[in-house]
Structure formats: C-alpha cells, structure tokens
Image 1 (cartoon, rainbow, N blue to C red):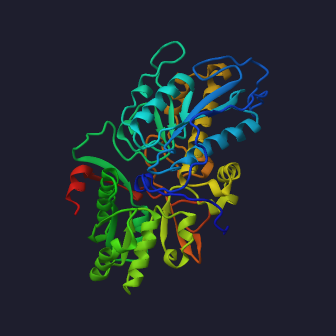
Image 2: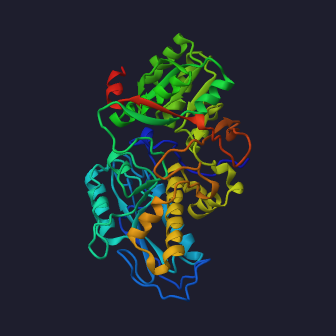
Image 3: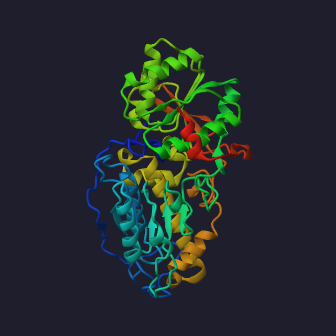
Length: 459
C-alpha cells in the first residue's frame, strides 16, 4: 500500500460547499494557450484528410474547451482549484501524446466564484468561444439557458455539451446537454417541493451492518446550507431502510469549534451509539472524535466520514484511526493498478490531487471517448457539437478506464468500495481485492420523500 501522496480531497461536494480552505493556485479567469504542433493522434490517420474548422471552438489546428469552477470566492478561496488543474493537466498530456482528432487541445478557465451570475457568465463565454464545457464544478448554477439554446456555428440552437465533474443545482443536473461523473440521483424533470423518488447508494451501509449487526447512533447533518441539510434527508432515510437506527440527527457546522460538539458527543454517550456517520467535513469529524474521547465514551464501533478522504484528516492520527470512508473510484493509493489514475497523479502532481480533480479528469476522459466515437463514425471533420451530443447520448456505461465505478453519465452507479484509516494510512477493506468494487444490485435503494419538507423537520 502506498503512503498518502496527495493533497486535500473531499468525498462529497454537497457537504463541503463553503468549507474548503485551500488557496487558489490560479487567480486568472483566462485560458491556457499551448502553441499548436502537428497532431498525430494514436489510431487516427491525420494524413488522409486535412482538419478544418467545423464548429464553434474548433479550428484546423485546435479544439478549445472550457472548465468552470468556484475558485476565487473570498468565502472559500481555492474551493475547486483541482478541477482547473485536472483539465489543464489532461490537455497537456493529450497534446504531448499527439492531440485529439488531429488537433491540439486548448483549455480556457472560468472562475464562477460561488456566484450564480458568474456561473451564467461562464456558460455564455463557453457557448461563444468553446466547443464544450469539460470537468466543471459550479455550485450555484440555476440558469442554464445558455447551455440549452447555445447556437452552433450555423446559428442552430444545438446546445453546448457540458461534460461536468459535478452539478448540484437541479437545473444543471437535468439539463439535456449535461453529462455527469457524479451520480444523478434524481429523476428528471424534478418535481421540486414534492415527494419524489431519489436513488441512494447503500452498499457500504449494508456492509457495515453485516460486519457489525444492530448498528444505531447519530447522523451528523451538515447544517451550513439548506442544500446540505436536504441532501442529508434522503441519506438518513436510505440507511434506516437497510437497518441502521438513528438515535439522533443533530445539525453541525463545518466551521464549529470543538466545544460546539460537546452536546453531540454527549448524545452519543447517552444513547450508547455504536455508529456515527458524519455528513459534514473532515475537520468536524476530527473534533467530534476528539470530543467523544474527551468525554470518555468509547462505544462507537463504526465511524464513517465520506468527506474524510484527505491528507489533512490523516495528519491527526489519534483522532482519525479506524474511520471508514466510502468511495466511488479506486483510491489514490492504488495508482499502480490503474493507468488512468496514475496519469492523473502524474499530470497534476500528488500534492495537487484531490477528489474534485479526480472527477474532472474522469470527465475529460468521457469527453475524449465521445470525441473518438465521433471521429470513428464521421471522420475528423465530422466533429461538431451536435455529433458530440449524439455520441454522449450513446454512452451508457463509463468507467474511466476502470478507475471509476461504472455508471451511466445520466445515472447512478451500483458500485462502491470502502477504505479505513489504519496506522495513519487509508487501507482498502471492502472489497479487499485491489482494483475492484462491490457492485451488487442491492446497493441502490429508492426513497420517496420531499427533501425540503424533511429538512424542515430536523431540529
């Protein structure tokens, strides 16, 4: 098992929206413009046909893509910097290997700054100047009309391909030109403020119950934003459906001092909790474990924190030891078992790699697969936004070369795996064989609820 070689990473976007503290490594909202060289794609004959300008963002020499991420907000500087790093690193690697569709890949970046206005401006900019959005992560993105009606080079409202790492806003999630690396748990169109079906992954919860029957305890609800509280409601219901009993669902803040967790730790002690699921950030988990230990309670058998797959978390070994983290991709420690994972860590550097960047790299791989499919069918000059969207619509199982749990880019995966902190390192515990996932059909349950209404019931 490799030692930890990477920077701050987070397992779930929703639980850390405003809580990241890393500094931005790129304060510019401009783009990178590598000098084009003669492309020689592996597997593509670039001598039989001269490349042409075929659509917005495509010239005879280059394909321009744009990556948008919340980076420059003073509320959370550097939040999704890893998305920018990943897409730029992917393009550099692609260009060094000969380009894409006999052209060099150019990356523009846009800082959406945790602002719906800047997110919309980014969509407008990408519509006008880029072939596609790739690897983006903008939390507040309510008006996606620039994606839906974006005109192609002939003025037709074809739409802008959006191959996103993540999308929180339901409008982007359900946009017809958006394809996602993160799970799409909703059934589109979404009936907002109504009871509706939501798909939730429960494979890890089932496994924890098999290993430790009768689990009961606390779900720490991330209380900083309405969206994070609502996201907790269907996770709570799904875990209860498979047999975990919650004695309490207290709200916690990712910015709270340890003293604020005193009553939460007391609740765990009073209820004899054997299970604690932390829906907030890694700092909260460390404080909760520290406070529980301070109060002398040691009855918790299973600590789970899906936002704790971080180097920062491992820096407090006494508080981190034994914590479980459930992942939807092969862990960075297994880079030797997967070429795509190794490519990502090599390109961005281990200290700059995190969960968000991993998803952005995987989105770039999905983009490349769709481009390759277009070229195989229509040739290098058949590459248009319409053709790319058609190719994306025909991809129903994507696994980023085995790195990602296989999923439909418009759906949710049945697959996951679990690591545990052991002696200061993340160690695979389920399934135990490196490079594998638990992909039982029982790992997905559908709950019926209105997240907003259920969130209002939480104390």
